Image (tube, rainbow, N blue to C red; front, side, top):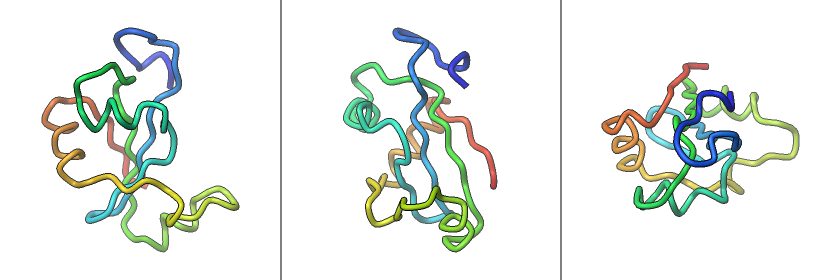
Length: 93
């Protein structure tokens, strides 16, 4: 995955987002959260986004001990901007 990142610091771990059609969360990459939200500072791209058909399927795929309520929520507008700027790589789960 690391060889897909671009720009400064290309060997950093990617940002990983997870979500359903209506809700999105940050799973990994909290150190780049502010930069990704503002779009004005470096953050590794592409952002990896795993989309699930249901919240149940998403919950069943999380590592043990990870609760959705403990993750940062990501506004749908941010997801739209990442898509528009082609900074996101989506995969359906």
